[in-house]
Amino acid sequence: MITAAVQEREHYLNNSYGIKSWLLTKDHKRIGLLYLFTVTLFFFLGGAFATMIRIELLTPTGNFVSSETYNKLFTMHGVAMIFFFLIPAIPATLGNFFLPMMIGARDLAFPRINLLSWYLLVIGGLFSLFAMLAGGVDTGWTFYTPYSTTYSNSWVIATALGIFISGFSSILTGLNFIVTVHRMRAPGMTWMRMPLFVWSHYATALIQVLGTPVVAVTIVLLFCERVFHIGIFDPTLGGDPVLFQHMFWFYSHPAVYIMILPAMGIVSELVSVFSRKPIFGYQFVAYASMAIAVLGFLVWGHHLFVSTQSVYAALVFSFLSYFVAIPSAIKVFNWTATLYKGSISFATPMLYAFGFIGLFTIGGLTGLFVAALGFDVHVTDTYFVVAHFHYIMVGGTIMAYLGGLHYWWPKITGRMYPEGWAKLSALIIFLGFNLTFFPQFILGYLGMPRRYHVYPDEFQVLHVLSTAGASVLAVGYVMPMIYFIWSLRYGKVASANPWGATGLEWQTPSPPPLHNFDVTPIVTHDAYDYSTVVAQEVEVG
Image 1 (cartoon, rainbow, N blue to C red):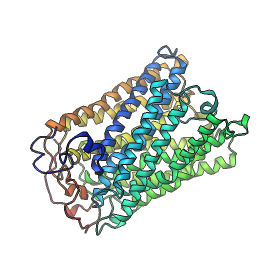
Image 2 (cartoon, rainbow, N blue to C red):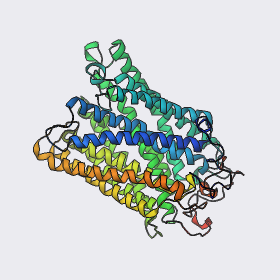
Image 3 (cartoon, helix red, strand yellow):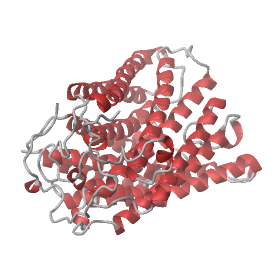
Image 4 (cartoon, one colour):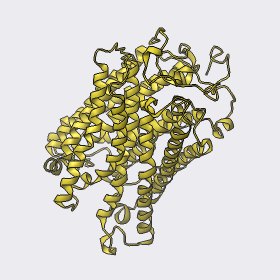
């Protein structure tokens, strides 16, 4: 797929061919592409489940699938999208590919462990995929007890085992990033010269290493109770079902920041390069990433406001949930200040950055709503929570992921994509997303419970709007895959630095050499110092 114009020199794509050279590779760039292929498969698998959910909700009577099948659809949608796409999407693909290059390293600290982490994700994914094909699981992606330990006759153990194995992939990736950042920065690459993309992945890695073992232990306890009938969560055996919620959310709320912190790192890169300005308040944005990583471990209790938690504990968690919004707000305000009087280019990556800021802001503000005790009691387990979650995770993480993919695609492949089609897809995704999920805020406020496939007639109009939006959104998501594949053969050959960016990854040819840098770079300027960039024509078409 790479033409002779790109093959004139040796690079990581044409160094050696054959499946074996890829399956046994220790090159972080190739492993990043292996992750890209894997998470893309799970993205479209999860999207297929979402499509069936929206078709079912077109009518109030639930005449497309049975209630049992519907329970399996929303469970498998959540499992595929959260554990096998959203959590690994940015760190394992773009982070794996570019973090070493951004700090001037030739690879990650532990290349073999890096390859092992991809195999663990694949093995875990295969277990969960087997469970889906064998009959599915119907507990909800949170695996709440007693559904997961007593009542469910579905493939809970196989699915949980898949998540357990993939968790080690997350832990190893985080460990690799931490050691790489600490030990392999190029000369002159001080902490205050690191790109904010690296800062965000460093903060994410801390959550991965400290938080993921907790959910692994939770899954082991679930396994012991379900298989050996040991009383841990089942009150009839002397257990406590609320204990499962505490353990699950102690990991799963920080896991939200595993998904969103890397997205914030991408947006920092995009806002800076396409406004031709250094990030306003660089240190505040960097430290905000670390603050989010720390505070994220202190707010799990806001998921238990209606789960026998004392009102005093709920007040504390409510306050902390408001407090964790501050570093996120710092980032949004600083991005906005960076844009002020900037020389803004409306290239495709920047459109995705704008989309992220808008959608994430809506998701963040509604997060304050559900952190308020009185309002949360009203909207708990309604579509308001579904909409809030998707504005953060889908509207935030996926918008930033696509923005980063478009930004670094010329570096990854050595090819430019068709800018017109890319801008159109960004617009379709933004419009389709809002049409899909904004009506769900209204549905939830009116009292529509989530995970119900039969509902009163008065909710149908809003559900039809949501399903129509999902159809538009699906078109927008398919378009990049088509023109990215097209660009591999027909796209314009990209220069080393088509955007005129400052990062070290843009100081190498496109695609990058096998070992990134022939000579270890020496860093002499701050990140986003555009006075050091040689003026050149920016390729946007």
